[in-house]
Length: 101
Image (cartoon, rainbow, N blue to C red; front, side, top):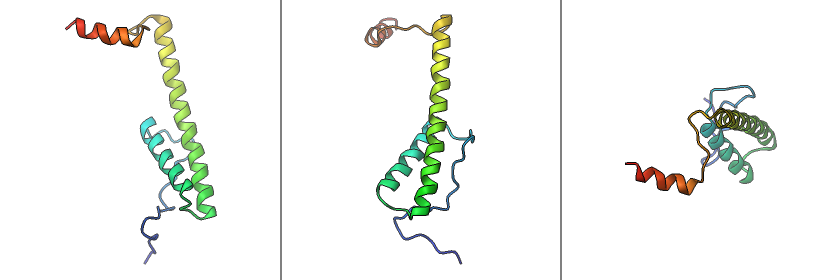
């Protein structure tokens, strides 16, 4: 029989996110990273578990950064090509959107 972690203590045995894994969306990766940070700040892990979670956090941060970089490039490409995206004042855009209906 396997021993369960004490109540309130996260399982260190959950699968770790690995660098290069592209299965998580930005939101999923960010949520997982936020949980890791909160758990590390709360001192919930042993030293060895903390190191593994820190490594996972670095990989998740890199995943988020890569996704943001791709989104930024996509927006810049659209702006430069003039396709489907108009850069304007956000307040003006919100006002105009209601007028056309």
